[in-house]
Amino acid sequence: MNRNAIIAGRYRLEHKVGRGAMGVVWQARDERLDRTVAVKQLLPDNSPGDAPFRSIVRAMREARVAARLKHPHAVTVYDVVEQDGTPYLIMEFLSSRPLTELLADDGPLPAGRVAELGAQIASALAAAHEDGILHRDVTPNNILITEDGQAKIADFGLSHATGEGTMTGDGLVVGTPAFLSPEVADGEEPGYPSDVFSLGSTLYTALEGAPPFGTDGNQIALLKRVARGEITAPRSTGPLTDVLLRMLRRDPLERPDMAEAERMLAAVADGRPAILSGTKRLPAPTRRSRLPFAIAGGVVVASGVLAGVLLFDGDAPEAPQAAPIATTPAAKPVCEARYEVANRWPGGSEIRVSVRNSQDTRLTGWEVSWTLPPGTRIANLWNGSLAQDGDRVRVSEADWNAVLPAGGTTTFGFIATTGEDGGDTPVAECRSS
Image (cartoon, rainbow, N blue to C red; front, side):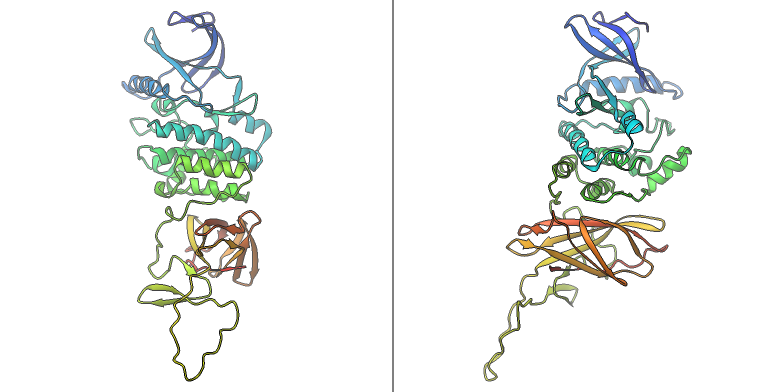
C-alpha cells in the first residue's frame, strides 16, 4: 500500500506512522468528513493453515464490537472496512506516543503519575467490561500518552485476535508473554480478571522499570514463570504498591474487578487512602490451626470459636464480698487484624495484613503485632510504620490511614524473605495505639 492510496473510496493515506506484528498504521484523511484519521491495515500472523485468515475474521468481528465503546480514555474505532481482501480499521488519530516509548526515554515514572495514568486506563477498561468488551492485551505498547499527558488504551481485542502476545490456535506463543496473566499463560481463556492483571503488570513496569516477571529472552522459561505467578519483589513501597500487588494476585478471584481497581488507583493519585471495601476478597486460611482474626487484648479459643476478652480503660471496680459476682459480656474488640501470604516465590513472599475497626465508633490509631517465623526478615513495608525488637514486630498506622470509620478497613503490606518452606503463618494481634 502506497501513499495517496484511497481505502474504501474515502480514506486517503498520507504517511506511515507505525508498524508492528499486527499490521501497519497510516495517518490518513477522511475525504468525506474532512478529518484526520488513523488507518490500520491488519496483517495475518504466521500461523499454519487457515489460522491467519480466521484470526483476521475474528479481529474484524471484535473491532466492530469495540466500536461501540465511546470513552475519553479509549481510542475510538470509527469504521471497519475491507478492500481487495485486506481488512482495515479506521480509528481516531492521536498525536501521541506509546507508554513504551515514554518509559524508554524517561525511565520509571513517579508513583503519583503512574496511579493517575492507571486510573484513566482502568476507567476505560471498566466501561468496556461493563459493555461486555474484553481487551486481552493490555501492555505499555497499547497505552498511548497524548501531548497533554492523557492516557488512552488502544486495540481492544485485536492483539489477541491476531495472535500478538498470546497463544495461537495451535498453542504457539507469539510475542512476549511478559504481561500475560498466569491463567492465560497456563492455557486458559482470558477473562476480565486477566485484563486487571495485565494492567497491573503494565503499571508495575511504569513504576519499577521492568515487568513483574522480568524480561527473560527465553520465552518458554518466561511463560512458565508467568504461569507460576513468580513476580519479582517490587523495590518501591507505598499505597500504589499495595494496589498493584492486589491486581497481580495469581488467583483471578482474589483480584479486584476493574471498577474497584479504578477507584483505588484514583484514590492513590489524589493522595487519598485506598481503603479496601471490606474483606470479601480475602481467601480462607490455608492452615486449619490458624485463625483468620486475632482480637485486641488477647484471644480465647473454645471449641474452635474465637472470643474477645474484656478491655478496661482502668482498674476494674471491686465488688462487695457479700454480693454475687455478675458475669459481664465481653466488650466488642477495638480492632481485628488478618495476616495472609498474598504471593509466594522461592525465598520470599508478599504479605498483606488487613486491619478492621470493630467498634461502632471511629478508631484513631492502631497497632498490629506478631512474632516472625524463624528465618524470616522484612525487606520493606508500605502503608505503615515498622518497629522491631528481635523476632517481635509491631506495625502502626501511617498518617493517611490512622483514622478508620466504624467497620472501616485498611491494609498494610511488606516483602518477606524466608526459608524454603516460608514457615508457619503467624497470628497477628491488633490494638488501638
